Amino acid sequence: MKSSGSVRSGPEKAAPRPETALKRAWFSLFGARRAFPQATWTGSMTAILITGLVLIVAAHGFDAAAVRFVRSSDSSIIRGMADVTNIGKSYWYLVPAGVLFLALAFVNWRGKSRSARARLTFFFGQAGYAFLAIAMSGIISDILKLFIGRARPKFFATFGTLHFQPFTPGYNFGSFPSGHSTTMGAVAIVLMIWFPRWRLPVGILCLLAALTRVAAQAHYPSDVVAGLLVGTLYSLSAARWLAARGAVFRFDGDRLFPIPRFRHRRRRDRGMGGKKVAC
Image (tube, rainbow, N blue to C red; front, side, top):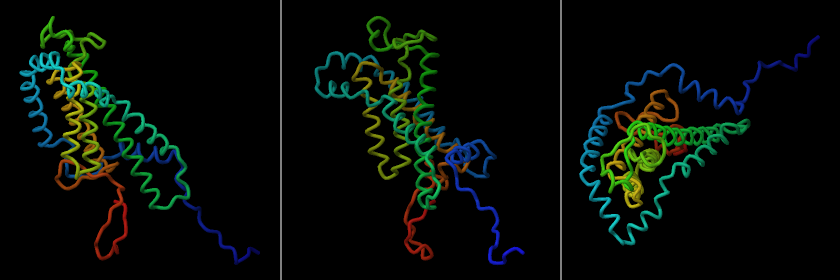
């Protein structure tokens, strides 16, 4: 006879394995799109695009004057800006984001509490988004460089500000748009989403970092504006694309910037008792 004291329970639900996080992320991104009323591309983004194009044309009016000013200047401010221009190198941001993403993708989440898994999911998703925003905007910028082939400021005396040699690989004819500025535009959007209260100072600092490319005589002002436009628009559209799939972000009503999912915050609703909850 079978012992009545031992009751065979149903199969326990397997704990998420390291690869489960990647599989779920893949399904969230490329599975069936959830029914959200918000669009990935908005009228505000169209306004940003049009404004950016107008600013590129306007900035071109200062291209020649900017080159002459930087070349004739002995200002310590200009020299200092040129010295820190490599802050716009994408690897400063891609390497830590990529390392964190891969580390969390393959770490064993088994035995973690629900709150701990929510935190891991938050950092996993945000690291992946930061890598995507900076890497893909940089690729778009490099493609535009190749197709446009604008000569850099070091050829100003020979060619002026509007000399183009499309499909010429290499540094000399890759001025438009600025790759460093593209990176700073992407970084600006990432940080603005993460730290909404600091959007204005973040925008100012990233703009100044992009302008160091003019001080370094590597780009014209119009190149910088174009790079910022590429980085900001791609990063913003990528965040909204993810939010439209319920992955990494969620929409904040009709606001332009989405909100990171699984971020812990305090709710003061009576039913929550002031506890931290993941959303």
